[in-house]
Length: 65
Image (cartoon, rainbow, N blue to C red; front, side):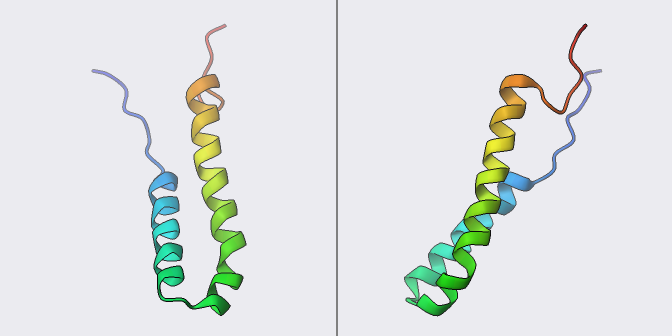
């Protein structure tokens, strides 16, 4: 049996937040966009960035000695 990877859902939640931000921009609610843009973009950057680092370096997994 192959070991299963634990899925955290961080990239999916980042996509959801970006879609929500896109909807708010589409609705032209500039006051809300000014409030949510930095937390949403920061979270998405971290979620996608850590996924990329983990895939290339296996930062969170065990490395063979």
